[in-house]
Amino acid sequence: MLDQILQILLSQWKALTKLRFQRRDRSQGLLSVFSKPFFGAFLAGLFLSLLFAACSANNTADTSNPTATSVANSGSTKASVLRFGYQKSAILIKAKGVLEKRLQPEGVSVEWIEFPAGPQLLEALNVGSIDFGHTGESPPIFAQAAGAALTYIAGIAASPQGSAILVPQNSPIKTLADLKGKKIAFQKGSSAHYMLLQLLEKAKLQYSEIQPVYLPPADARAAFVKGSIDAWSIWDPFYAAAEKNANARVLVDGTGVNKQGGYYLASRKFADENQETIKAVLEEIQKLEEWSDKNREAVAETLSPVLGIDLDTMKRATNRKRFGVVPITDDLIATQQQVADTFYNLKLIPKKIDVKEAMLKPEQYASLSPKT
View: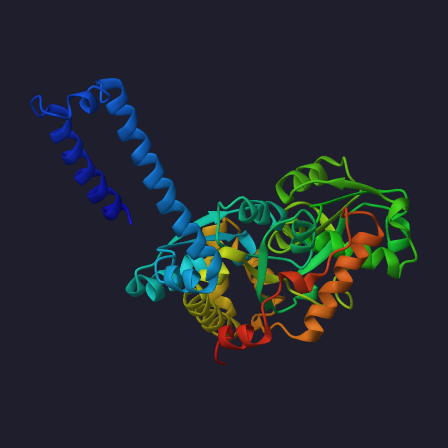
């Protein structure tokens, strides 16, 4: 369309130039109309008119057949870079380099961005700083309630023993009921947050009967060591490190309440435009999970220097982890909806949400699921 505009303008220019500068003839009266200012204004108006007509034509075509336009553009929208957001709990996939090996032949490079917890990771996903990442079950609820355009890609196997509520060794707190009135630190909107809610309910305590202290893991550890909080709800490897080096005692772990391990998520745009890349990523994650389950000592030996955690502590965290990618089913969606309803009923999110709105269609999940 732009070529056609230029051709029309060129022909008009030639015609007008010839008319403007030809010698006096019978059309002298007409030629006097084409003074230089008027001549330039005429050309400008002609150009804008043609450009507007072209744009209007394109907009009409887009509106009348959006599906065709989407299909036409789909080949050019595949990302050449996968920006992967991760937390320390899943740093193995970065350390092993399996995604780079798989995606490089397909022309896709991988960038790694670390986050202290899931809420920060999904905030980055929402503003377009990353494309893909993993969190516990709670961060997607808060993100969706805030209007984030995220998509659930796959589930993560639950590790109930990999999270706990910790208290100092000499604390008088012996039971969950003793948490009444106490300061409990945790990352707001994290899996540790939801685990605490479930354990409080189990002890017949209201959320209003404790003093929540919202802190990311590093700050919560500092507060725990300093003695400015009474308890800390946290996950591995922070949990294992606190047991070993922060004089922590386990009050209770997530056994019986932690039924989800979290999710792999992507931005809606990335999920729509890069399904082949996502499928390849899930396949590599599943392979690594299967290898890890059979080689736990090797996992600990790999992660110990990467995380700066002593080997014994890393082995403890690794041995209580369950590995695996979990397909998203109706049962899993229903369980996640319960999480959303719990946070809404406690007025911890601003509106009631339907988690299905952030899900793909069943046939899409079937096509993405890694072969086992």
